[in-house]
Length: 277
Image (cartoon, rainbow, N blue to C red):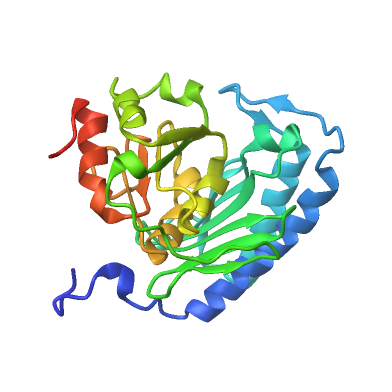
């Protein structure tokens, strides 16, 4: 909170239009790179952590980096594929060129390009871009989240105060096998139903009121940084599994809720197996 009592998320981002112009130009260019590789039989390599990567991931990240370097040469850039450049800036762009590479290489349009801006380590701008469906979510601190699409959908999380009515989503059961607590299944049982798959696209659906809760782990900063301003600008909350604000040293757990009234119960279930009340 500031001295005037204004939540940080409501404080306008200085120079937001110029920053957003650079981010959207980078997203546009990355989409042009990615689309020709979709369902093209692209070669898939395994990285040291056994996660897949393709020429589309690497080329898209290089393209985003080039645009940001040209427009904002004093800003740092951290990307999944090529690491950190220009250490020391209070502004750092965080890139995941294809979040959901498994979906991408199997022809599923549920992946996305993630571009985020951190200011002093805090996510203040985020984009989810789906280059096949033409959907784009844009979150900027101090502004409502914006959704661009040819598909139907209205920005705004769904009012859902009870977990028994909630649609729960998670990318994969394998992810939960590495969870830091054994209680994810308690959250699953408390929810109305669970849907697997989606990567960053599921978070976009949460911002549209189609999904109510997402609980995942093993998440790197490039997996979640862009999601925070998008979901919070749509009325939701994003924390770790303990309900704490995400930061660069977070433990890899991410909990997103469309209705903040569900947060306490979700946190309690994930940590104790029991609801908060």
